[in-house]
Amino acid sequence: MFWLGGVAAGVLLIVLGAIWIYLGVDSRDEVHDTIAREQIVGSPDMSPDTFEGEPVAGMELPDCDVAGEPIDNGTEARCFADWMRVHTLESTGGRTFSEMGRFLTEDGEETSNPQEAATDPETGQPKSNPSRDLWVTQRALATGLELSFVGEQISLFALATGIVFLIIGIGLLVMLTAGGVLRGATGAGGAGPGDGDAPAAP
Image 1 (cartoon, helix red, strand yellow):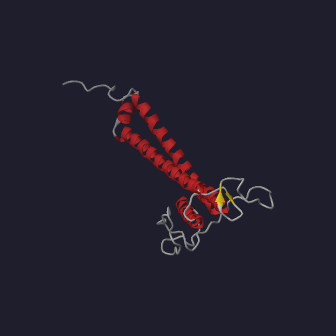
Image 2 (image 1 turned 90 degrees about the horizontal axis):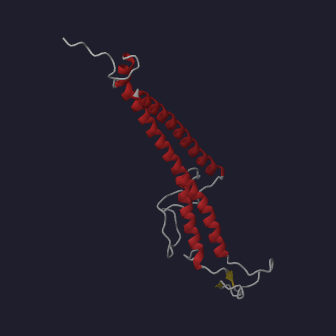
Image 3 (image 1 turned 180 degrees about the horizontal axis):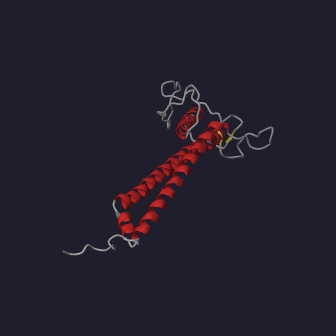
């Protein structure tokens, strides 16, 4: 009766494959719809061919191109995030968050000492460094875009896994049928292959 286990395994793999394929396609569509809903469009200089800025220390120009293109998938979202980093590094002189002071002094110099910082007339608090705030905003937006790329890759992995399960399940059932296992079992009254009456010896 071992063939029953093979049939059950084949059917289970086909069902699991179908579920994984559905989830993979649905997740990928969800990522695309979510990105497209934000109506993001690449700026004209988000291309190696159209970028006119001067690279600064620590800046590597992306080799992708989303200039003037609507962003509606994970790959384009990651490219957009890479170009956002370039623009932010231009504004901060090539410095990242940890390399900038938290506040500005009366002379416009950066400092991390609140006692030396100028006072914001609206809040009465030490005046924050706008370049540092810009970096925080850029990283928050870029993280969301990069996560959409990760989500798209996971959905593609689920889709590929589902296809593999489906192929293995179908192959197993074909092997059991075309290979004669089920025919031998049913021909023997369901007793399994090799359990039928052997031909009489001459």
